[in-house]
Image (cartoon, rainbow, N blue to C red; front, side):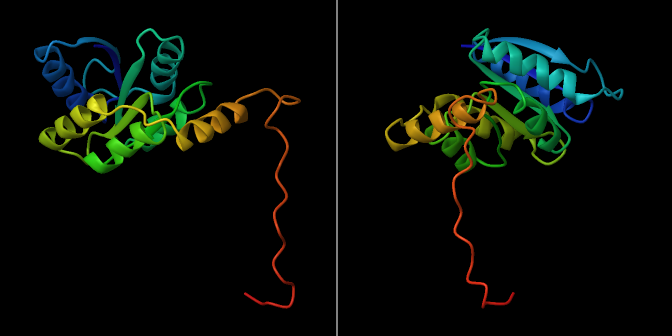
Length: 166
């Protein structure tokens, strides 16, 4: 499988480990981002991974920063990206089964190498279930449409009973 891995300085060590592990397993891995522990900004790295995945070159990506939060926020700004921050194999599996996540985000300072390997393996081995989840992923795609396109109408939300106090 072809993958792209991006990282900032906080995820550099974990990304190095995962790149070697994935290549040893026979995957083709492109890398972008930090080349060492020196500070670099994660938004351009997240955008590079996001744009590559959105074009299908390759179809899946992995981003690693210190917590995984920053890269997930930044990657999700790219239309077509469904980046999921995962801390365990359950969230990794569900992100693929239910959300068809195409970018996995990890916290390099929060997850050890063995756990990261288990999360990545689960994420790569899990397929999208489709079914009722397809409708929801399609609704996510609609949100990405420019204004004036389907999906920009805000659904009505019932107002709480004004007699109730909080």
